[in-house]
Length: 178
Image 1 (tube, rainbow, N blue to C red):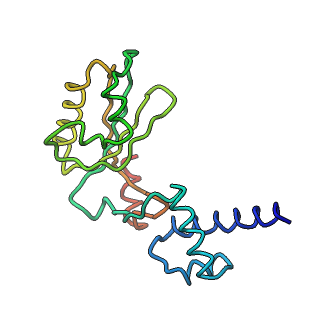
Image 2: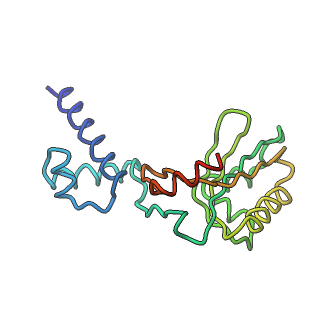
């Protein structure tokens, strides 16, 4: 019976997480209706998920086509030079924009990956010049750790965080350049 309850709770947790990813502004009643449980159960489960750092925050998804910001991806290939102790302490708790002072960029995500590159940094900047300045400073300040950088500009954001970012007309226009 206990295994059945654990499986059922795990299933409800998964449903709640999916609903929050779709729209974290739903109230507890709406989430409960969609997940087949009471608002009280939703509140208990969400509190547990937050305490266990499964839910680490709630944020807005901004449509880049409607702002004056451009989205960029920075691919970083590391050298084999080991990190010193200071760097090891900084990495998990410091946003990449805090590693480089006085840059006009906003961090979205930092990902350690397996493949040709070792890190992926996603960020916004007002223009390509500010994005390149950020990349140049990263390379200058941390050159002993970086073999190469590659800056990508997001040209056509079709979907972000599960949300459709472009209308049908915008998709048609964007696909002309692909």
